[in-house]
Length: 179
Image 1 (cartoon, rainbow, N blue to C red):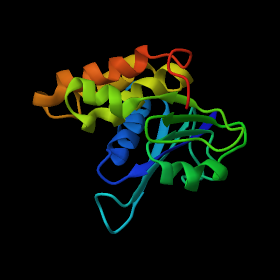
Image 2 (cartoon, rainbow, N blue to C red):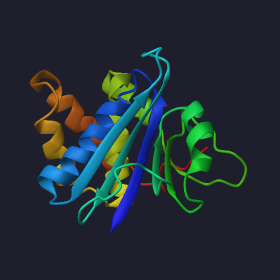
Image 3 (cartoon, rainbow, N blue to C red):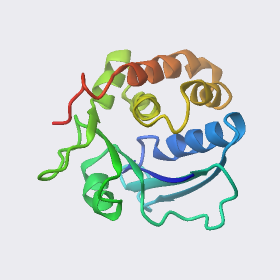
């Protein structure tokens, strides 16, 4: 099994952290191999940002994404840029409060930013999306992503991060249709 995942958004949305958490959860807590690479524009906050994660049940011979099997897209620019570089049948997860899919595309949607705002901080939208990713794909298990959060985020934000993750995990695609 080799699964290629791309997280895309703009700087300041926690795209790099989301990619890191997926890779950490898979490799340290789920006995899978993982490679994470990141790219971001020179503008830092507000510029294009992406994280590519390859998860496999054995050695990863080629550590770069070729064609995504799963996309987590947090901005319209990321959707427009990355959707058509993925497999036609890729699992596509969007923040449907910020992303409007094209034509006949029917991604799984969740209002990640809105849910994070309900918690009091829109900065947790990336973690809401991670919970949704775990629920929809099952590639990285809930418990391993929670463990990655516990061992990565500052202790003062852990409770809020776990709440954000749970919100995303408990929101099924059927209850949060794409726009």
